Length: 221
Ligand code: GTP
Ligand code: MG
Image (tube, rainbow, N blue to C red; front, side, top):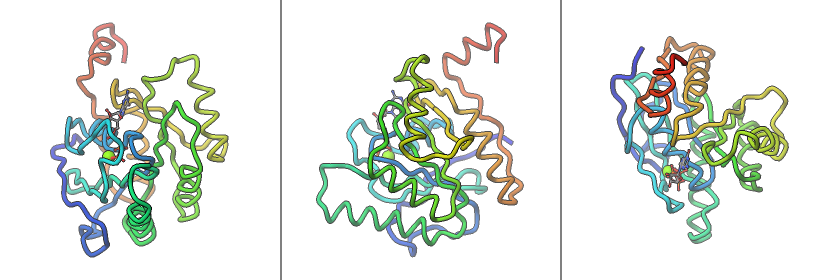
């Protein structure tokens, strides 16, 4: 099926504000400025559904986005943003922890890390936390457009080694700028729905990105 409608539902900080736990949710976690909100927009073919910013600390609450009333993407506040007070940071940590610990319709959490950088202590803590909470620990390496093809494998290997990602575990490089990796991520979402027993299968969301148009013209996929 194609996406007919995607919309912002609510911004929440505590469970009483969450929408009903009636449809599956997929959450995006990661450091501030890593590209969580941009990835959400790219996946849903929307320019500005989730607000993005070049300045870290844009998303400060848990934002729920509905996709055709079939599932939700949950944009979590970014962690590791230096320019906020300690009590602020603690509060964000609590929002995230409570959500991950209590949300029964949450089927997977993707950890986003910047492909160019070695994950830091907070990323490692988040990854361990996600895995210990019983999720697979899928990793999305963002900003793929910022690295040369020749450096790709070493960047991915560095991320895997630092986080302690198991061999053959899912890690996908993506770019919200040129949309590379989008199909792989959609394939993974569909697999997740299927594994969790939901009859949900979306098309790969072919986009109008210029590089894809170019490729189509040349008869490639
Ligand atoms: P917080 O809300 O602060 O947690 O940040 P976020 O993780 O939601 O990041 P956001 O999507 O707002 O993106 C941060 C900055 O990175 C913006 O300037 C984006 O344009 C840029 N950005 C995001 N994804 C990509 C990408 O794939 N490639 C490039 N080159 N820039 C990106
Ligand atoms: Mg954001």
